[in-house]
Image 1 (cartoon, helix red, strand yellow):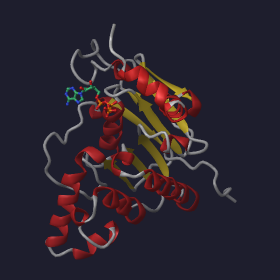
Image 2 (cartoon, rainbow, N blue to C red):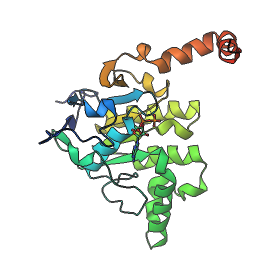
Image 3 (tube, rainbow, N blue to C red):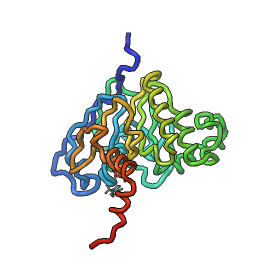
Image 4 (tube, rainbow, N blue to C red):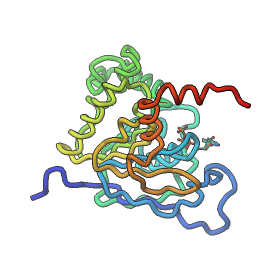
Length: 253
Ligand SMILES: Nc1ncnc2c1ncn2[C@@H]1O[C@H](COP(=O)(O)OP(=O)(O)OP(=O)(O)O)[C@@H](O)[C@H]1O
């Protein structure tokens, strides 16, 4: 019998496809961590992508979403809608290894959430009002930013599926980030979900037994929670707020 809580994965690894010629010189291959990406393995139910702004986390997550068949501006396989720049520059170069293949899932993208919410309203207004049941029973636009995020997480996600979340903390209060940790925990333990999450949140990164992949210095390497800048800077700030502010605000010599 399958042990409750044991890792049950779908996406096992990703790799860049072999090039016939030299590596292209344009985006996304101008991102060092992407250009030198060999193979990345997934061994935990929760994998985090973390690293400095612009280090390539969203580019990689979007390419995984594209290859998983999800709309790259956010949604699942069933969501078809028009949005600017909904292609994935990296998608066609990425190879995914599944075992078994996840047939269900969702790509959450804070950046394009507004367009996704409008798409759901459109579907509801075209004779499918029941679609709103998956988003808290009312238009996502009629909920606050943070409420709409959590409505989606608590109502829309479920089943044996892979969830790709790009900065889900963007509108969430600390308390609601804790609620999201609970949602993730329940989906893993009760529904065998797999999560890959790009985040800057020291709260979300604290999820137990997660793999944290750090995008830094042109590499993607696994690290420990306490070794991340997100943890260290937040902890130092909370423990030494006055000293840190003094250092930040002091006049340059
Ligand atoms: N469509 C694009 N065309 C050209 N360059 C792009 C494009 N999208 C992103 N970039 C560049 O690629 C780099 C990586 O961007 P990406 O959005 O993947 O970073 P990120 O790690 O997710 O950053 P953040 O934490 O700020 O969300 C950035 O330097 C960005 O300017």
